[in-house]
Length: 270
Ligand code: ADP
Image 1 (spheres, protein in one colour):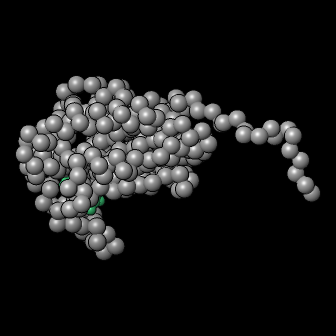
Image 2: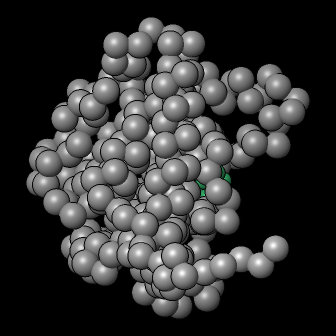
Image 3: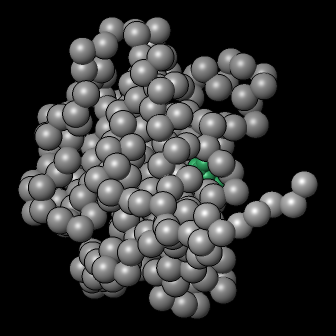
């Protein structure tokens, strides 16, 4: 199954998120229909990760963004199920510390970019600096307004230096967020997940949609396109993202390196 082309934002394309249905599940109707396929993809991803590590010519940076409860954590669990944890780092971007605020906004992101051979996942990312920051005017418009170009330049530099950058916007509906928040509130084992900020930010839903649309329009580039992922159905979200990552890694045509020594001349003692 190929990602529907309308899920990949073309550079400069005006995006209206209302036109994208978060409920979309392609040709699938229920989770059961995708389980076998996802397992197969997870295995393929493990193999490709091994190749990425062996070859060590590229690194893979996966950026996950979306509204609260959109499923960034669940995506990491579902997509990365079975991969070698030694070759993968997950970095969560929280409210910047004083130290981080005293540097340029890309400093903490750059520090966290995976090294060659590795996969890095950004749970939130430098895009918060044109999302929450824009919605709440945390810096003047003149400052956040320059950041789209700065982000594009930064990502281009990464790509030119061997990092593959994949960006996924997990698209859920406002109703789905309500249902997920309510479900957390009715399950004592999930109470800890309910945060005042989730409820507070929900009130800014429309402002966030606008900020996301501008981000998608300005920062979907040939070298690092944004993917809009229908994410109301967790199983479909995981399937599409895994498929997309496997496809991208395959296209790198990676090869196992030649052995450093002549294997035919080695005798292993009994
Ligand atoms: P999550 O919601 O990702 O599971 P948290 O509940 O700790 O994790 O939320 C992290 C918070 O940090 C979010 O509200 C997010 O908007 C905020 N944040 C991240 N980056 C920035 C930033 N650059 N400036 C201000 N707030 C930020």
